[in-house]
Image (cartoon, rainbow over all chains, first blue to last red; front, side, top):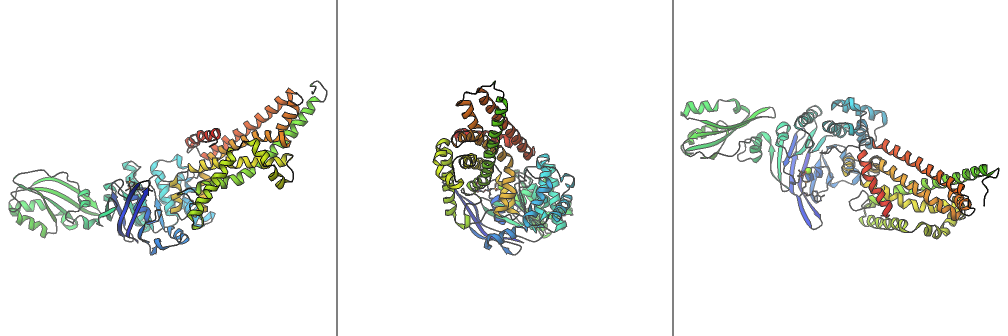
Length: 328
Length: 254
Ligand SMILES: Nc1ncnc2c1ncn2[C@@H]1O[C@H](COP(=O)(O)OP(=O)(O)OP(=O)(O)O)[C@@H](O)[C@H]1O
Ligand SMILES: [Mg+2]
């Protein structure tokens, strides 16, 4: 649905040159929620703004729903943008318009006439749970309500894609959850493809199907979360299941076991103890529900050296678990 | 010398004031209208043609945008720096060309509009610059054309400070209209000079001052009311924040 190919963008302001994006490529499949995570200054905003060409890349192509945006004339680009809704960290609502007026903005731009516009706006406000605030001005709303208006405005024109630039960063944790749930609901009910950027792993955990990690303008890791968690050495997986620093335990082997899907509810530890007579200690565990599946990571200490534990480790791996030896 | 104890003094005063006020309102009203019609787009183009602005490259030419910006910037600065009395005299040939004469209230409209347009354009520029660029992006992301961004985002969102700017403009038009009156004839300024100064009638002078004061107060009150109405108490902070900027620009002529 969204295809970003070899996109680079360099900013020159004054004497400083910033390579905000360097040969970035990513694919967002239809109907999925794709999260791009990275630290401040990593290039997240530049990336998402490149998707609807608010920021025109220096090189590379951007294709959304079959339209190669980077090749379109200004008029065609404007038309293509109607298929791409965008929500912003600071909401960007018109202060002089009511909630309904804000939602109608996109429809006015498209040229929907008054009555149909009003009906559509109220319908969308109902969807985002703000039907009772149609006549209020943005100044009278809470942050979460403002973001709902932002989402309603983005959805009014029935886009196929929703872009979200840190939509929840200005909100408290509880409001963040309710907004994320709304995004998930829109994704499921309307089949909308969502590309969101965030610096919070919780956002990715809660609603994303796929994720990419961006650092210094480059994508360093990307994929579907279910496969990322069974990829050895995946930094995203480590971020998803933080187990902290590895303790130093002389004489023991410390292993991280990542399991997902079927292996999640197997009695692993009991089995190790029974089959190999091992005295297993649990050092840490993180369990999450990702895409409706249980997934998690457990850190265990097995007595003896890694060589001495080769058999049980092989056994675990053969059961489809990802086993990484992290310390001894 | 006019004798205040003459039987027809007060009715005469009233008559003179009525005509003077009517002429002043006419001069100020028409020049204000022209000022809005020209100054508003001028202010918008001034902001838009700046680097990174909406009309940075009109017709695809960045160079044209820069040239337009420089030229308008120059004109506005010129208009704002020449003292009004000189501008007025210098404009006489132009006024003649447009109106056919340089005497009378209608002729006075020309220099008044000429002096007020750059003044108001600056106010519009300041007000529009205050509009959050995020709003422009939001409109762009919805597929808005540049014209739609101007008409649906920039102007409505800058309305409140623009109204306050307009009220400052009106005040200075009234101020200048009195000056024009002494040269071209007509209006309250003319009354003040002919009766108050040349014929030593203090009562006429005081009456003119009172009438002008009332007009200015009413207009400013109206503007403040409207500005507040359009600020949607959303950002009264915003209107108040920008007011010092406007005042400063009025004082320094920047
Ligand atoms: N218009 C611009 N002009 C100059 N430099 C810019 C511009 N926009 C972004 N940059 C630079 O590009 C880099 C990436 O910026 P970007 O806004 O994409 O980061 P980000 O990942 O969104 O950060 P944050 O989480 O703080 O929003 C930064 O170093 C930033 O300073
Ligand atoms: Mg950002």
